[in-house]
Amino acid sequence: MTIVYKTRTQLVVETLREKILSGEIKAGQPLRQAALAEELNVSRIPVREALLQLEGEGLVVFEPHKGATATELNVEQVDELFELRAMLESDLLAASIPNLTEENLAQAGVLLKQLDQALGKENAVNTWSELNSNYHNCLYSGAKRPQTQDLVNTLNKNADRYIRMHLLWAGGISKAESEHNELYNLCKEKQTEKAVAVLKQHILGSRDEIKEFLLSREAANS
Image 1: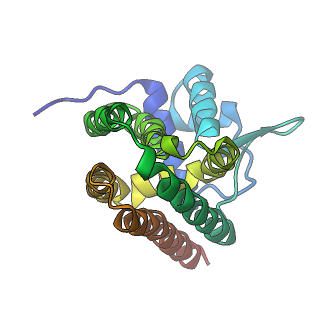
Image 2 (image 1 turned 60 degrees about the vertical axis):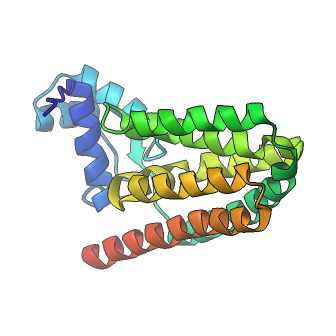
């Protein structure tokens, strides 16, 4: 059994993340560093570092003259973002698979192993999220469609906080792992139609689980 030691910053990150995702901290609610430091019995330094990390996750925003506030998690935005992702990423994958080289596939295989190794480590979700994006981009690299790829990257940045929430709260990592392996094998076998179907299910399944979580959270807080 491995004992995982966590820094004060990481403990503050996890506490505040849970409060935001559970709805205990409301959208738009100010996050005063001094008050949070007193509540959590830490200095302001780990609180400031935690808020910056949560800003990177899309759960906190820093506004002029207002400081840090919790961002809004929006069900309608989830629908639009993930449906656009499914449409554009499916087209990219279909165009990419016939042109994927052995080198592309080898790189994707390395990223799959890194995704597996990232689990259980400190900041696992942050590392996993970045590797996940790199893995998908690797499979899309054969499409040679830079403008579509730029659009997909923008959508993924906007969806990132929901993806991280899915990984943390809805068992998304374990499910994504099996889907990633299936997708990889289908790409290796050049089974484009099946690979596209798995990718669509991968993205839209995440959408459905995220929406279910957000709606249940709204119901609990109403």
